Figure 1 (cartoon, helix red, strand yellow):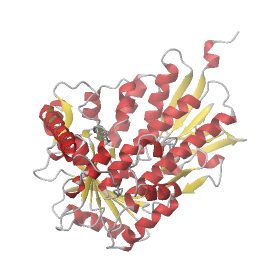
Figure 2 (cartoon, helix red, strand yellow):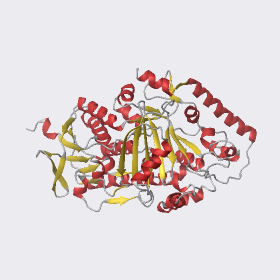
Figure 3 (cartoon, rainbow, N blue to C red):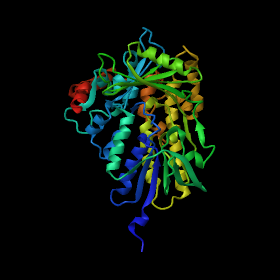
Figure 4 (cartoon, rainbow, N blue to C red):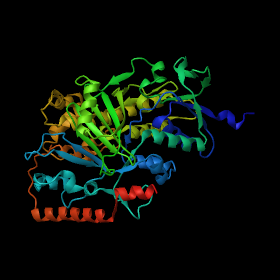
Length: 508
């Protein structure tokens, strides 16, 4: 007679970091809450550091943390986190006629409703682009960002806000925090460095450590980062590069003290430089910043110097790291009994903070595809098709930010508009969007997982790609609509807590 334990399968995750521990926590909660179906083990090397240069998130990561039962206050304190309402893009177009820098804000928020006509068309037809940014006219988050306020009121409960929000988070501290929670909930943690993989047919039989230990499992998850140590052993010629569309494959990351007189912003800043762009992400204890650049045009030393010049001579740099980024994704994320999660599966440059989102997405998709019995090949094919779709969808959304530029000051920016040729669907849609509004139906049926028509509009109209609409509108009705938005914005601002006050309250 078989014991219940005979039905328990072994699932081993090689690699910690955000990918390993988010996935371990998710699968453990799903499969082992009622009865134990999988024995989940994370083998994490004490010698191999995680990328962990700082992490901004999209707003949907809140739902993951909440579903995992994490206390939001503890999460914020343990990871030196701040709140994020969106991204301020600066210098992605030529300066304005008066010499001021071009900028626009991409919030997580939906555009507000109009009247008989959608508010996006109404904004165009009312000529408001002549005196205000699109985000200023159609959403509430911009007022919070401008005034240094958080998305929280004093009455907001955990994971709730006046507008959608994500986080700025220390990725190293996040991995440690998730590891602690996962171990408390029954995940096995082994500190060891895997240096070899034992293959049998199309499956991994075991992983071997430098200490000579051997670990067998039914399912292996490859969370080894850009090394892709496990999945690369099972299938050769499995990589598809996005470099032609997204040529920024290098980065230099600096951690520095918060500049004197500044407090943590509730938004990310992405400033275009000569051959790429710089991020600025404020934590409670420091600022994470970096330069994502085209390594064919700049050396590592040149990039670091340009970043330091941008930040200013007074910057108190704590440490710097140079990164080679493998931009693209696998053709097959799931081969045999091995699934690649996180950087081992693919990477899209972090312009829209999709790193943790893709881990969350992968773990959730794996949960619906992974069976306690033997997995049919059709299920693997489904997982691979969907994951490829997600990466291709994100690729074209990132290309959108570059291909609309009118900058001509360097070869990098002069050639940026041509990147749209690597995304035929987007190229066709941009032509259509010269003549009509970007709307939900344009993207319906795509693989979009977080960026919808609303997100496309913030970028399109922030970059000046306005449709030539011919309708006439009642200017009185238009004024009423945008006055209502302004009044809503003022009410939200008056109900919100200043960002620094909120952080101080959490970190007492």
